[in-house]
Amino acid sequence: MRVVVPFDAVEPKTRLSPLLDAEERAAFARVLLEDVLDALHGAGVEPTVYATAPVDVDAPVVVDERGLDPLVNGLLSSSNTTDRGGSVPDASPPTEPLAVVMADLGLAAPPALERLFATDGDVVLAPGRGGGTNALVIRDPAFSVDFHGVSLQDHRANAREIDAELAEVDSARLSTDVDEPADVAEVLLHGVGRAPAWLRERGFEVSVTDGRADVVRRV
Amino acid sequence: MRVVVPFDAVEPKTRLSPLLDAEERAAFARVLLEDVLDALHGAGVEPTVYATAPVDVDAPVVVDERGLDPLVNGLLSSSNTTDRGGSVPDASPPTEPLAVVMADLGLAAPPALERLFATDGDVVLAPGRGGGTNALVIRDPAFSVDFHGVSLQDHRANAREIDAELAEVDSARLSTDVDEPADVAEVLLHGVGRAPAWLRERGFEVSVTDGRADVVRRV
Image (cartoon, rainbow over all chains, first blue to last red; front, top):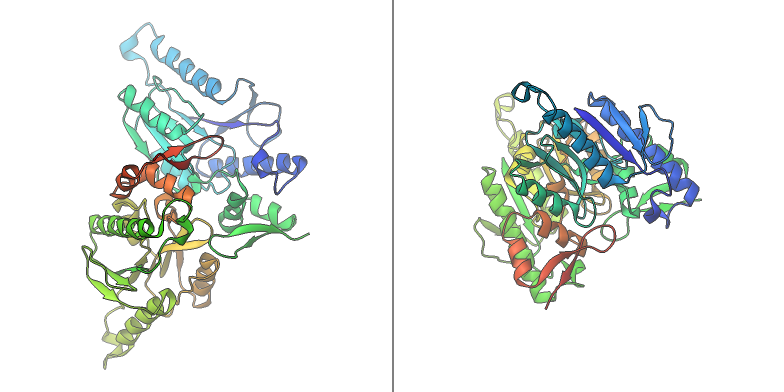
């Protein structure tokens, strides 16, 4: 299985600006990426990072400025070409599945990723909070992605259109992309990598008044 | 396993007042409860509702006004008494486990609940978004609950204090209690029971501008 982690190295995590300044947001995005790579290694796969600018991490990095949809759809059509290009079509090997895992899944842990990779289906989605798609496994190269808008609904529809067998993974860890301040509380409560320590070193802690936990920064 | 669903029949879901008036909130809370009961039946268990006022649903109902913590801790100490009360202590049967499932888990589905019930551990927690505890299985009657504040942290600490084996279930469905308007979008996107239809009949639909999906009401 090819495992791809797209990474926006330029101005990441702007919705965290109430908590972190631009330099901190860039550093935090890097820490989240490293945690995701560690979790993927723990799940026994070898991810490749597709970054919009060079980044030094414990994985091969391809610099690719195409943007998320053209990147993933390009990778899918290249596997598609491979699949159809043999001179003996009936003997051509099955297309290698493509997994895409977002770089900001701050709660990612090996068991959740292993469940994703082990789930049968031509298209396996890990829904993100608010209708996003936080990770997916694509075993049918006729599928295409569209990460804009309510991508989960689009991906369900795209799978139906090509008669692909669709499955979804029920994981709170994979559903939590770290975009908004409340997500940072989730990292403090459930994170297993570097990110919780990084946040605590900078004064963040969980706070609750009424309802759900949020974060405060003690400086 | 005893399975208990506590239900607040008096002024439920006040944090949904931006979307629903008081009468609608009461009706929606009932619909969510019915969906949770259906999901539990689908998972092969027979839940009992502990409600603060009489309610007519497809399950036995006990009216109990004690409040959540005294209710659950009372049920635990009654099982504790049973456990220790035999005249032949060594031959006494193991305490029957107690499962508590919140009535507002609008995404609950049998597979997620089956995973919860099948997870080994003296205390098995299903974390809720924002540090809550949305469901739990208690197999050690020395455990006690405290649902105020960041209950997940308190429950982890309580389990450690009594040397109970602690486990957590990684489920987005069980992590989603329907408290805030954004949770209503999750029900529309992922709900499997009556609640999504109930919302659509009243004009609610998923809307996305930038970032995560929210709900709008077309009237």
